[in-house]
Amino acid sequence: MGEFVGRIRSLALALGGPGLFLVAFLDSTFLPLPGITDVLLVVMVTRRESAMPLYVVLTVAGLVAVPGDARDRTQRRRRARQKAFRGRESRACDGVAAAATA
Image 1 (cartoon, rainbow, N blue to C red):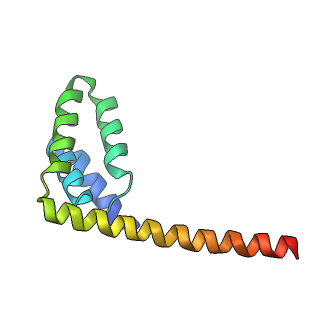
Image 2 (image 1 turned 120 degrees about the horizontal axis):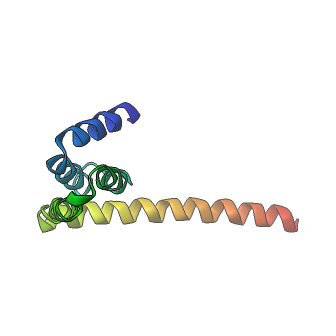
């Protein structure tokens, strides 16, 4: 997965603003890319500060270009993963607390 993400990052940097739109679009649909959109935005703005408004607009456009039902499904999946992670984390903490009190 790391190599794939690296290729997407390289492609986005080579394309500039349209690449940022593409990464934001993919991140908000079926391919979660946590943090990559943010990092790319920062890198691209530091390289060319005068294009910041364009990069921000393209990023937001990529995030909201997803049809509503696809965005809702993606958000439901993310919430389910977060809930499952919190459940595992909670059970692990309960086990540590039980062992400490025993």
